[in-house]
Image (cartoon, each protein chain N blue to C red):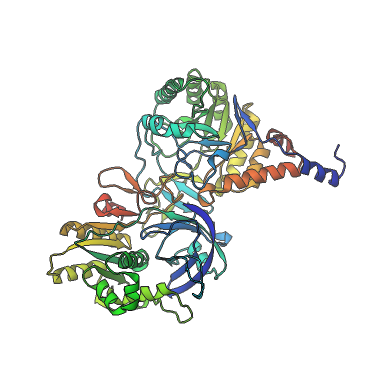
Length: 307
Length: 326
């Protein structure tokens, strides 16, 4: 864990109010893991906003330092995040240009465990929740049965594998306008290709049916479950709005599936000291989202009580 | 003799101000501490804050029994402020003694243990039990308890806390009872949620307190108009941050003129100038609270700023700042 000033590499809109941020990683820090987050302070927040707290954001990806001098663009390691413009702090962040600096504390919180060998990873993201889900999916694809080089050389089979046996992404959005557009002709960033592939291989659901399946992420899961005759054990991974997380937890419990869900709560310290960001634990007492989470086993939290 | 700007510049370049401050029998290496509830017991922040460089670490409140704390959500940000209702969540005295104290003992800065009871007896039991534990550590070794801060000002618990801190008779009796139990400095942390804070401060002094921490959070509330319910689960909470700084400075000013024991200023200190306001108002030392969440380097930056200010104004000792208010 470290506090550092980081240079913004990329900060661009990918959907209405949805931004993709890429920033320089500090060399002496371990790479972040899927599920982990950082807190930031933008360079400048309008003083009338009266903001005094850092904001937490989840990592959406990581690219290690490039080893060859030949490779173009950034040489340093790059961390990625997908964030929503919600208030003055994220609005200030959205205004930051490449080359400007943000104050970062990273890496914070725990991470998603990998699925067991016989489990199929069901990776469910709702809206802004797709960030950590893309990170998890990319990481599973790299470290699981499919090697990165294999993905690059065999994009077709990568797409098959992410929607095939090992990994199934299920993404939900309000409507087709909110589905992010990652590709950007001016930037040659490998992770954008990975995200594009993951998104195109994902089972898409929209609340109004304007793209893909008509319904919520949970409706989509129920649909896929009914269709699934394989009797495979699903390992549910989820990140999204509170109601979706509560539904995912109930779905996992009904089907007796293991599930790991990412929680959200207002934070003050972000590192486990202040006890401010707690959620009610199923077995009584409270758990800190920042330090005991943000990834929890589905049955650890009383999700209904959080709504 | 300083007769010109040049003399002053030469002088300020050539001397290092004495930053140490005395709170009762305790000498802190510098006036900048971190307030109770911010650093916990010094574990989580150890990679981000140079804890050993602090003047003092005021621990998260310790209660006799473990406390789960209040329901969620416990926090809401307000304009230049933060409302919290944590409810003194802590692992309880025995866990503190067993698991937290050994680590605190290894720290170089002063450790002020903040205590709260739901009855006057519980405060006494806390001090008795801690003192008993400390007799085992031998007279020469560092105890990990350099002073007590008596929390009689937490607005987020039903019993104890602020309910004691608003009554001068209880404050004097409680402070007196603890005074008979320990020779370590006693610091009474006062609530601003009273009609006359000087009355409470005088009661604490009368009871034998060595210092006053001034102030704890101000009772506040935010209502979510869409959901038509309070933003935090408990409804009311304690407001901290720059929003309350003028209240803290005023309380420090009034209290330091009402008592002869040292006052420790706390409330909304974010930059060195904020800390210096408190010192000019009459405080001998300060505590950084909410500001540390956004900037863990704040204590170091504030201490550096105080040092620079003292050099610029030719101030030899922190204590001397008190008399500089025009």
